[in-house]
Image 1 (cartoon, rainbow, N blue to C red):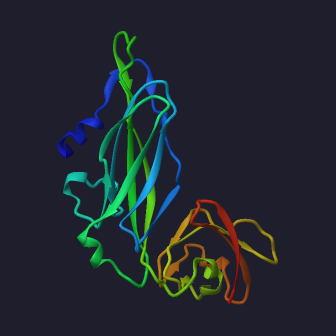
Image 2: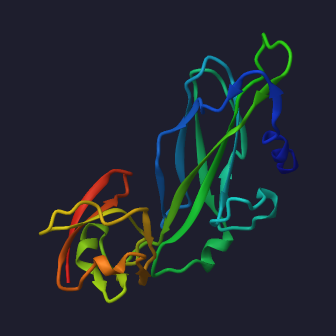
Image 3: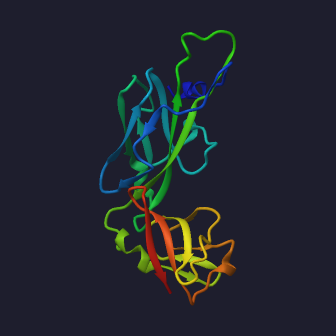
Length: 231
């Protein structure tokens, strides 16, 4: 089955360009509770035709071939046909390799989903058809972490040339604003703060340990949440 996966990404010559994903994912990110054996992701085919979907987990390298990966998480089923206007539940399951993951902090993986549209029945001549690939972060969260996700603001601070994350969580920051100057967003790209780390900020001259900031982060539900940061 896995050896067939590479065929799903093949490009077919056509006169029409197909690059819109008809199979949508309900999640924008996945939180895997380490105290459980699996978690689910819901897919929905919103087109009027059946689509083939292939899914797998990688550890951050989008070029990695699925058949070469040996990770703590896997997707079942790896390849599935979803009929028109129908849904499909993907199960992300952990295996014995999960025992080697850190127990004091989150680990991050990526869920890959490829939507392969059918060949048009009324095609004439050449055509170009693309499979559409989506990637979502999967955060493996061990049970019993000491700090609640709701208290992240108490454990993030500006320290010298970096932003220090003293939590066991990955924190996605999409914006930083000076609370007093109101000068707009100080970020020009999204930051992913790793657990118990100090992230060097490219524009660190804009930050000061003596100021207070509003960090715009993405929460467990994929929505924006503003938190106030004071050193």
